[in-house]
Length: 81
Image 1 (tube, rainbow, N blue to C red):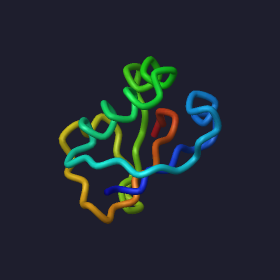
Image 2: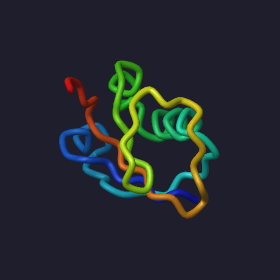
Image 3: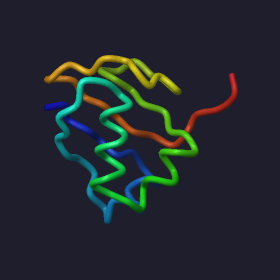
């Protein structure tokens, strides 16, 4: 299972839970399971979040594969350049 870290202000939507394990093969599957586990986070996920998978930042990468030992950090959407 991937280790999922909820970053900063997003913890307000997870009742303060900052780390969890989720079994998922892709980022889309992980985000769906995360929204099911923490319904208050669903609207924010739908609006967009950024993810760092093993240190590499992604946004809108729905089908990026996740390894069983990966660390996925869920962050507020990063914008700009």
